Amino acid sequence: MASLADLKESNATNDSDTVNATLSTTATAIIAASGTSPYLCAVVDFVFLTLIQMFLVFFGLVGNTLSMIVFWTMTPQTPTSLLLIWLSVFDNVVLVFYFLLTGIGPICKLYQVSDNPSPGP
Image (cartoon, rainbow, N blue to C red; front, top):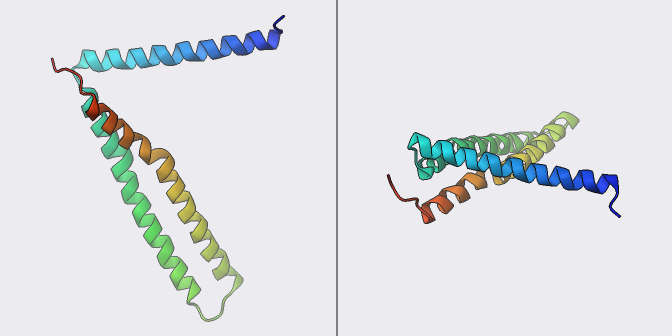
């Protein structure tokens, strides 16, 4: 016999699946009604979510690397300079993981949509 917790968990899973399906259907209907192609939406996502992020991540990595070099070449290694070096190292790690987690999705979406173009109006 199923417990009350199992039933609640099952209903919550079904509810979230229903909500996700409804949102996906609604988004598709809005795109179709507006006459905007999914490819155009994928390109806009790619430009705003990936290219701008790549620009910011690149300059963040360059700036952090330069600060690591400057603080590493200081003659007296003070605790503050070591702290700033490690801050730059971990900031570089965060920047790389941020780009991997958020920047790859729009790239995949762009190629997925371009492989299956929808028929034009």
